[in-house]
Image 1: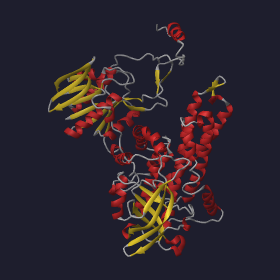
Image 2: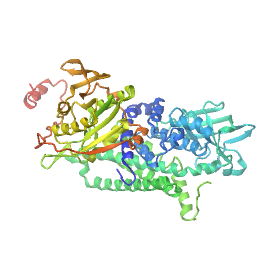
Image 3: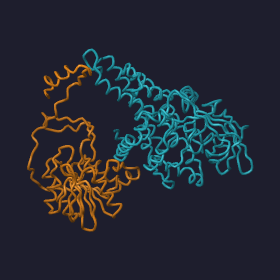
Length: 388
Length: 248
């Protein structure tokens, strides 16, 4: 393992996590992929192992560790081949909980962050709406102040953990007239009157309960406002670096998994009297794919090291997601091809991997939006700055 | 109660084993190492004594610095301290001698070793160690209870079990049954981080003679390809078993 970034403790954690996933998760994956539901016990087990608290304060049960532990968690989750299960875990830890930790006050952290770290509560982040995903400023969900409460109306879609989570971190407009300056973030209990969810049927990520959520006159106590009113947009933007880097790391890890699997297959499979990894056309293709994955992985590690030091790396993280998800799709497409007819069969991992990977250039900012952001920074010299 | 758990650093059972230098040296290239499974059952039982009876647990290994991640894992599982005796483990007698020095120095009440390591399968270290430190010895141990200085151990015998009573100091050669596989522990995050702060002491090895030296290794002959015979073709099946496999 890359010793520039990973210590002996990181390596011990990776082995421990691999062992845990193999023993406690892998035996259930095919069932969860079929039912589209993840059994609840596994959240508690992740919590007990300390996997949800690695980047969160000790005061709430976390361990305040560096970001390379997160990288290991993300990489190993990709290597058990269920994009849906992996997404459920990281959407809880790095989408919902990120907001609780960054913007929540002590009371909210006690009520939501601590039980999220222990695995007793599961969260989701609700930003995307049916009318627009990447157009955060065009959001239509509103939160109107009503005495000591806010009344929330609107709908969200493509929400990972959208159906079975215990709480929802929701973006809504508190001052619609201010456009993207009028957004606020709330944490809402699942059981609150007026919250309803519908599970969505998808191409991949089958184990994930991705949902569409409706808010119909949902009364939320003002104490459940995260941070300050009308600061929601800057909070969301603030976390873009981590979110995009996560998507980039997931991409390089699943590409690496695909390549490792294909290489093993090709070292066993024979055709025309020799193993197929001896055919020059395939060997050269492998070399190109391997090089692409290595470049993405090492770039992503370098960006992680900078983000871990507190640098604002929104451009670099955007590049990470743009390029790594593209490489992952190309690598997985080609690895499926290496397996021939078996690649197309559900008994082999490539079919699921192929479907799951396709979300990479779509979710968490489409590649088109990412290119536009990079173009603004590179061509128009626009400087995105961290929220203060 | 002071417990010493002997830990062998062995290749993972799924590793592909190869030899180099004309089959005289084990090739560790690309091999993942783990705690010897028989030792891990013993370590887990030691954790039980720690949690239920307040025992203090030290793990020990004879090996070079490459074995330290294995000791760190034992610390992450919950051992209080670790000792590495700085010499390669190449011979059962010399390993037992090195362990005996540590065992005498630490005045341990109970020493848990695996009945054998899954790499060289010598199966001699626990017995030799018991003799060298003049302790009682139970091999193939599948259950152990300790009350004060009295111990009750169950050992596997051919086709059954034998329960024996004995006293501390005691050495056992442990195996599956001391705990079940489902009881084995995966280090959690807190354990991994705590392991970094626990003492891992390196002691130099004493001069010890080696009673045997490996000359060469040999792998089993690879199994041939599977031949499928149609269920209604009994003649062909008999022909293959008789003339090819030569088993009937």
